[in-house]
Image (tube, rainbow, N blue to C red; front, side, top):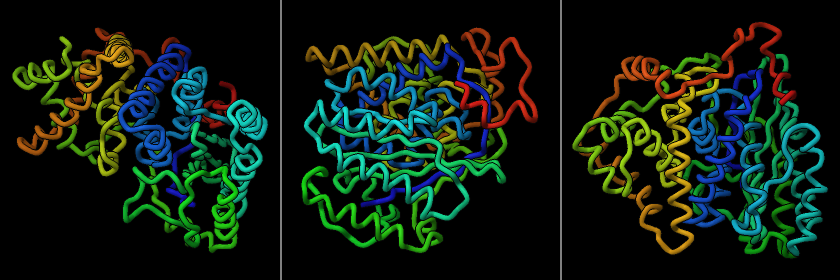
Length: 405
């Protein structure tokens, strides 16, 4: 059993507007499907159990790059988009926020009935992870989001979030089963508790050592548990600053998108004729799908794909968002009928951007980039959650607004 990490996020209120929620479900599902297509279901679970990758995914989907709302919104979008295709993709999302989290055992048992998995073992694992983060970790956070993701092979990941009303912070916890090894097997990835052996089938009778390891974690020193885990701490401010971003990596994306010669070659790799702004978004999406774990240390950079619903770093460019979805969806559909060239083009684009980064070491001007995005926002259909109404302040902006979605 490994507890892969946690993320501390400022509590933010507000709702995800319908125009963004629908797009998040479509784009998030396409990204998840791309990961499954290229690397398999285990890789998707591994990525979901990494707090930095999860935050980058939320940012590239147009959510506020640093807020607590990323957790509920991303998980909700993936559940809506992935579950209708669970029989095809082999990944099922259970649970969620509030009453949905409390319904996780029923969802797991229903899934087990359909699939032949051991529902009792999955329910017990779900309850143990929730109890450990809610009770054994005495950090003042009460769990209100619990999402349990299961593959057709019986592998699982857990993403859950707690709230601390006094500090106005949320803390997101990530878990993954012992069988998920391909993305988080780094020296700095935490293994909390004594080694319980390698489990090939989680729901097999041999999975008992993993559950025993959880009980060992429950008796461990909470301070040590938190210190050992991979952690992400996001600031309370809304604006994106140069210090939040790896400017060399962002510079490579901008160079490929906007410099004519580099842009032309990138189009050849994708087998698509695309505008500069869409290519910029696709380059960041490609990195979410194909990037290695070390590439996600600065999740704020991925907000330069589709902005954020709060207007930071810029309003969500709907025209670009829709074109990004269209390109990715066409690539996935072509791959289903045996034409994988376009889908492979995303991997080629990611390699190309990294080659430009290594060879030219371009550094983005964060201020100039933000000013440019603001200037072109209207032409790209830029929208925020505050369109047509005043931005909330004080009590109106409390986290409880998220429960009204």
